[in-house]
Length: 84
Image 1 (cartoon, rainbow, N blue to C red):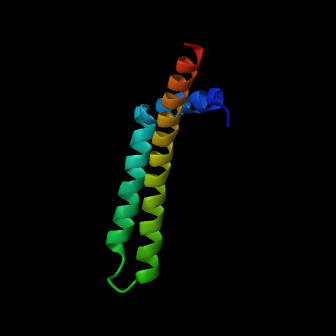
Image 2: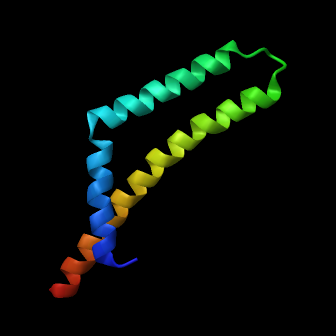
């Protein structure tokens, strides 16, 4: 991916993470997953593990968006220093 691509995607990732609707959607979805997890029995290991993995996948998406923002910042820095 080019530095310009990194910047492009990073800007969109930043917009996504700063969007209150997206943050609310992530929070609501995590809450639903937690409610489902709480409703499982202690010995429903597969269901509990599946729900835990689902919750972790939301965290992974948020982390990946953060990495995209960091990549964009690095790309901006690199391009700026290359020009100087």
